[in-house]
Image (tube, rainbow, N blue to C red; front, side):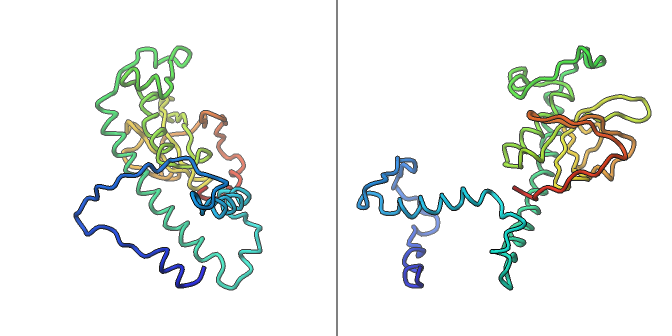
Length: 231
């Protein structure tokens, strides 16, 4: 696209600051694939979509066609650094907000003392019941991370066991680092602040899971495999 076309296409003639336009749009009108007059951008968008879908959500680590150029990768690194910084900020806000909300909606469950009878609610059940104990309220942090777009394969729930008395507690783990996840504790029983697992003392993880997979947490086991950052 030439410079003149770029300037014409990107120039803004929006309303002045503070004014509210009375124009309204339906942003989801169906596209028209075979009418250049009605939808001239359709083939251009379609071609771009095909390349995006073929590429996937991230550039493959082995894609040398992009990394071969002298300055390649700089924009990717800058975008990744900014994304990671903002995700940490969002996760901290989710932690603080979850703890504030959890105090209001905590409901003691007498069956929680016996894992065999303790019922773990789904998100829908938590909302329908308008509260729960720690194993339900943990879903506040878990679900909010998911709704804020954190990758599904990086957000898990975890059962932690307190070393001194073997009491159990549920938290959310965000695996920004595959081997040292962030802990988000909606009720604050383990930690009031979001912190790395390596910074936690007195608790041992036993189970890690989400709605698709489950794992054992084994002390001294092999390190987690590297995964692509920030899909």
